[in-house]
Length: 422
Image (cartoon, rainbow, N blue to C red; front, side, top):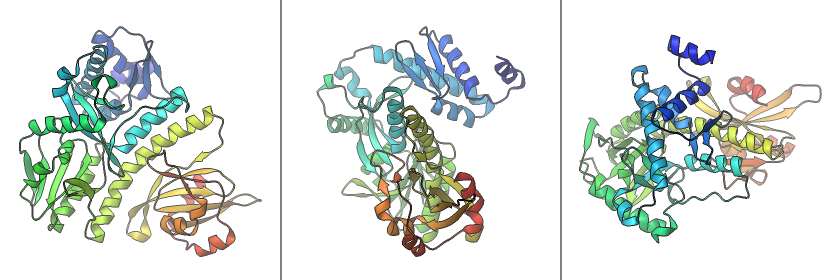
């Protein structure tokens, strides 16, 4: 009570509990009558009927907004949830919904977070219904309804009553998006074009090759979709424009709602990954990937830790640590820890800290490159097929012969961090 009062008096940025109260107050102001309970460990509101409002995205958007726009952001999310709830109560025939079908591109980690939330709430025995089309290693295409106040994502795919497959529904959705799309690319730097629709489907236009092929770039279109609201296009012969595209992608990703760190091109109208031509390009792309992976791994670790605790499983979920490397001109690197005698889920990182505890206390730490460790210790690293961002389970530690094959790197940079994480 006092914390909320101080937030109001001093206009402080609210913590998660205070934000949940504000969100619930705003719901009630719109006539929401169902009793809702805040579950702070999962940062969600749960209604008596089982309706769940996850607050993570709304809270993130609220914090990113300027103080003068925060009320608008809160109202936007609350209105969206109210509208989605009302729509879910109405059983509309497919022909009425058909014009509202839209395709969405989303980061694969969003689905993984929903799946882990489902496991935490219902257990692994209850299947998690989801349907999507693979686009790339880190992003997927989903079906959605374009409602007046919000976009309702159909994570489970089209309802059975429609009598349509996912592919058939997505084909209709792409047709609707094409009908709603005029050429609205703006040249934001020489040779760099950005979509300017600002209608929540900017990135989804990457699913329309004919639209991107009309952008006047040098050569074939190469594009990035770092966030839901950012679609950038350059030509495959314009290396300078690619550099700018990467910087703009990094800038856009700071606001969250990220989709992909990859660059793409078209092959027979299919979206395929595009290998950026220079080492500098690939370094900046790696920076972008770390920016996307860090919060995703953090949230994944939180959920996995709670699941393991609930199931009484002794598995260590290693953190995804990011540090500046003075030996590499201050460039950032990511690090995970692999400790002898500890059953561990390793994130995919630039480097691994191999930690060997001593009987008398302390530990010997050897920092090695991920790629070398994955090659030398492949039989010890078990990819977990259901997890994204990806993790490898390691139940045993490299033996002395394997350790001798691994070249130590970055000792000064990561010794303290590895000791703390071990």
